[in-house]
Image 1 (cartoon, one colour):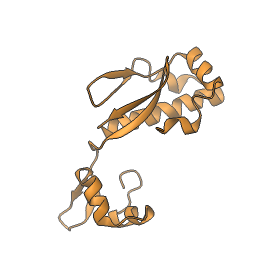
Image 2 (cartoon, rainbow, N blue to C red):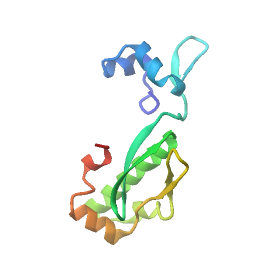
Image 3 (cartoon, helix red, strand yellow):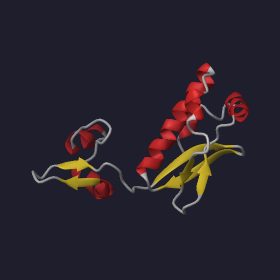
Image 4 (cartoon, one colour):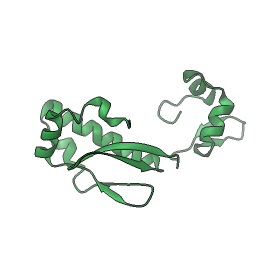
Length: 133
């Protein structure tokens, strides 16, 4: 709803769910407007499990911050751009950046180009890698 600007009804239909189910599952990420319609909040605290590459391999990271999840998505886009084109400018924007997990631990985003090349060659950084098992 947030990214595409669609209504609750459109979003729930797209996933084959009743609107009441969506409200029950994601109610804290929604706000009810004065006209009675629901809209997505600018950010939310829903649990997400992300997969991030580290020097030890892929690591699952649980977070409760939609902004951290967005940062991880932008990082994956930059990593895939680097692996596809060799252009490291996008991945360099993540030097020193970290993702905070549900326990408050900070996981540094991997920006070492040699390590990214190594893991990319091993198939660890394919598109499917971004989803937890």
